[in-house]
Image (cartoon, rainbow, N blue to C red; front, side, top):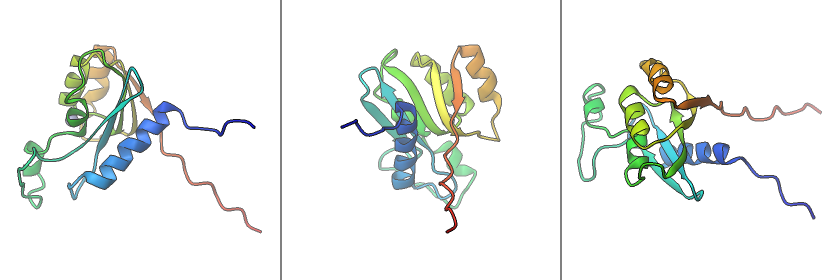
Length: 146
Ligand SMILES: [Zn+2]
């Protein structure tokens, strides 16, 4: 018997990132997830949210931006430099996360969507020698008419 087909680590990590965002992010505007795949293929997950035990006013859409910790920071919290093979994120990292990611020695990021409000991430990634790979979500297969 042949083994069953399985998804690549990159697609798996993106699905895990989407799942943690959907399940755990409290942000009513944007739910972001990140999955760091470590050298031994263990994973570390993060989502955007306030610091532990801190309540924030979600109705203040701009104010929340200064209070929410980004998914990438949460996923990489206990990851040491050189431990992460690649990082998967639902949304292209912002400029400050890109610098933080570089500090962890990460050289490859796979992502689903571009963050339209911060395109500096592209230039920074190039400068830091980080490869960016967009992997769009697969469309559900079209139903065939009978
Ligand atoms: Zn960020």
